[in-house]
Length: 413
Image 1 (cartoon, helix red, strand yellow):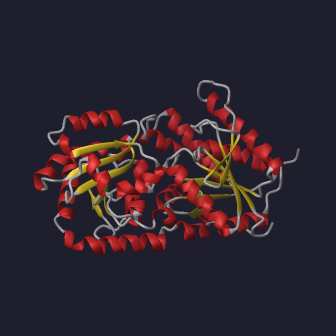
Image 2 (spheres, one colour):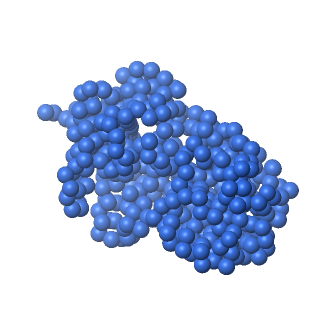
Image 3 (cartoon, rainbow, N blue to C red):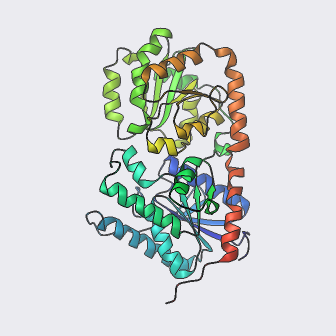
């Protein structure tokens, strides 16, 4: 097939998907929905790590996902090898039944290796999309150490997969630069940045006064918020540590923490011990369709990510959602944030790993309310023009056309 038409069938190879909720699944949903709107035929297949039970074939929000049965348990690295094999077998069965024209594999690298195994054997082109390097994500969430043997091996597998794929997509310039430094041809790499589905985040609702009252947020009190996953690299501990200085300057200031994750228990303990514990509110996890109600209560969304390879290389999704909601954004000055936020124009950047810098930035924003409306309009316009999924998918089209036009010769049996 020479071009992406309505008949083109794209199979997305995924770690996990809806109905599980994460930045990963929301990007996948936005991408697949935009491709369907474009007239392309899409489906997804998830590996054995998909976290929720369900049927072998599941339709969620109008999107079809095929599931991979569990692999036999084994210690690492045999476990990962079996996971690749199980996913490859499921992809191969779908090649016969669903007949995809292209395999669009998404990180982690296990998905790419499974897709490449089938793609090379069956003559189907493979696009590998990297949202974060698996080895750096492991360091960020506390399950790995930089420069360990596992880190080095995983990095090697990542480089191998990138070089073996027919094309590569990354979500930001940081990842692209790292791959080029590894010797990957820049012409092989497409940047498809994180974006926002303005159909979901395009019309900010008014302040939910009833919800504010239930949470103990007084009318008129400035509210700082974080909505997301509670991983160590997010730096929420630094945000909590900044609260005494913020409250000393802005006595009514409140902190609203929405979400959950591995650090939740430790963060709750830290907040309980704070001299301003009464100003810190934990909401827990919420349904995705309720998130706008919580955005409506927040004046400034804070993203105090710690400085490390993961945060310097990878752009997050949440600041874009906040900008689309017409909210002020304050974030740590790390590489991933600098790709999204222009300091003093679309947001405020502060020094990472520094509670005093966080407090100073927030105090400065709360003390300069005259510029809020202009800042919010500018940030919203940036999202509409440069980070809207309906236009972002156009970056894939020339890559798909090239791969489908060229085709890939199958391996001899």
